[in-house]
Amino acid sequence: MSAPRLEIDLAKLHHNACTLVRRLGDRGIQVTGITKATLGSPEIASTLIRAGVADIGDSRIENLEAMCDAQIAVPMTLIRSPMLSQVDRVVAYADVSFNTELDVIGQLSRAAHEINRTHGVVLMVELGDLREGIMPSDLECVVRKVLRLPNITLKGIGTNLACRSGVSPDVKNMAELSVLADSLEATFDISLMTISGGNSASLEWALSHAETGRVNNLRLGESLLLGCEPLRRQPIEGLYTDVITLVAEVIESKIKPSQPWGELAQNAFGEKFSASNRGNIVQSILALGHQDTDPSGLQAPLGIKILGASSDHLVVDATDSNLLVGAEMSFQMNYSALVRAMTSPFVMKHLKEPNIIH
Ligand SMILES: *Cc1c(COP(=O)(O)O)cnc(C)c1O
Image (cartoon, rainbow, N blue to C red; front, side, top):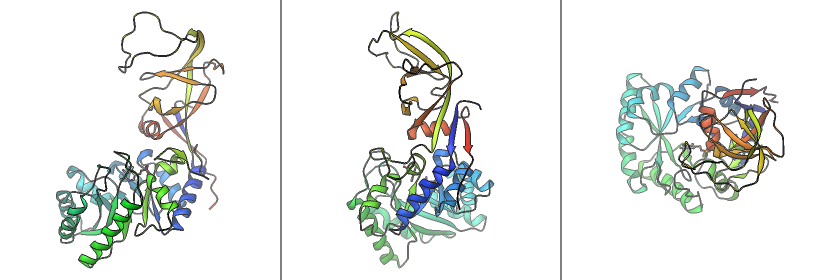
């Protein structure tokens, strides 16, 4: 089989998704399965749907289009504020989009009217992480205007934390979201269907507090795919952390000194060499590099140490494992390495036969 490749175990993914759908369901919280780290893979989306996610979300309209074209037939949400240049595609392919700008919602209204559709809007609220979101003090004013727009329905509100600044979801900011929902409903005499309390980083809050207020939705990507929570990157109990592994092939294996010689300047990526002298080592090279993944997000198997990487070469110390040319090696990945590998045209995606019990 060709390398590098991602081995994707759909049965393990199904298990992870079932587990979190059940744990959150017990607390009245639905799961939106987020596919953006998978380039909108229809197979991954349908595995998540079989596991019970309520709908599918992605940050790229291209991915939603690909899944629609592959007959994925659940509601689709664009979880990034639409580009003005893409509003026509957004109303054609997404049932709902996350929004923070009235200009954009106005254009969604126009575009939805043109094709005789109604487009759902979730307003994102800024609660401290300083990525997307309407400031809470401006929310009422925005809602008043959104409610007047034809062909737009206000589906709910949401927030996103822990992505840009690492602000953790906690009792205080999650309660603020609930208070905002209550107050909007009272002020405008409306009912909000979705109160979306965040991404995988909100799991710990959602599963460890008896009171989750109005939050009835979480948007999960990383926790389903990697079995990890993103605040401290600890494995989540009962989940697989090896749903997806990256396999690469050895193209050189030689005994070499551990220290370079000659005058040292910057390498191709602006870094300077630093490593202790360990005499001669078995140095192996895998056909894998920055064009395929984020090498700093790879976890090598026991006994192998990653020494460095350039665009197309990953250099490892294989003194303890004697890798032969042609041998394959599997790596576990963090989110950054996963996203890069999933979106690299050089990396083949191999879906392991889904052996799923319905
Ligand atoms: C990426 C993203 C998610 C999913 O985040 P994970 O950490 O992968 O669970 C949820 N919501 C928004 C707005 C996102 O951009």
